[in-house]
Image 1: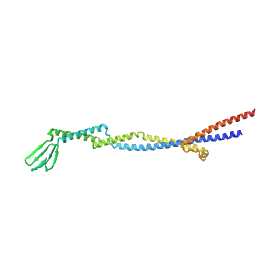
Image 2: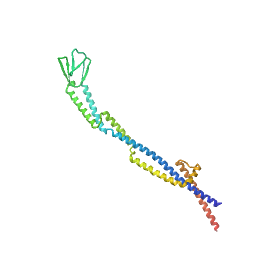
Image 3: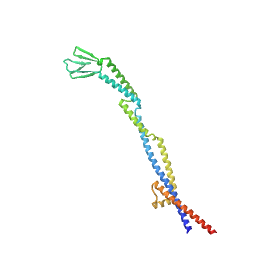
Image 4: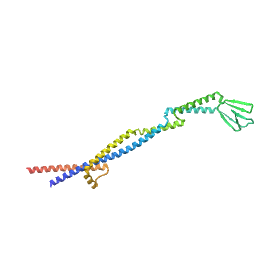
Amino acid sequence: TKQEVYSNLKVKKQKMDHRRNLLQLLVEQSRIKDLIVSLKNNLNKAEKNLETRKELELQLGSLSKITRSELKHLQELNQKLRDTRTRKEAMATEIKVIQSNQVIRLNGEELRQGDQKQLSQKFQLQVGDDVSLEISPGGGDTLIDLHSKCQKQQEDLTFLLKKLGLESIKFAEQHFERRITLENKLSNLAESTKEYVQSKQKEVEVYELKALDLEKQLLAFNSSLEELVEENALPSSTAGLGDLYKKINQTFTYLSKALDDAESDKQLIQKNLQQ
């Protein structure tokens, strides 16, 4: 009868409405769980990046704070010193004993056949007991000037290296290059601060509380949930649950319309009977 049809539609609508509400909660629960997993992954990554950042900062702290301009100045000083040394060595005098029947002494040190010396400063040469020579390589004053210049440049270079806490040009270049590399790595970890990690931890806590609240709400739908599980109609993914919700919602909409039509027929019959 039409009364039975109406009653059946009403029961089905109530059941479908219950399932629809259940699916809404399940979709939200699944979405929250997915979000928590993603947030925890991001949190773990941020924590690792923060540790890496601390290690990089420690390494940076052990390096010289030499600037690009200071390194350039060091390199220029070093190049000038090398140039001066090259000029000084080019003006040096070379002595080689080919053969001698007399004792030859260089600044008091005896030279033997085959001995070879290169000298850039004024020296004394004695041949036998009767001959004593004083020789100034490069013409004397010019070489002395170069020697003084070389000494001054070496002092300037040593002073600057000491001021910067470095042992040599090589160390200066290594420290500078290493620092630039570490600073570039740090710039890529700019977001990985203690505050950022704390904000992610709080975000995870907020969504975990939401997940607990949803668990409590779902307790009221245990019977409907068991029915869905028994029917093997419960997807495991958020997308699958969303599709099922749409399907149930369409069925609910269809039943609602059918029930409204049945209600209209019922009222029409009652009206006719009253007449």
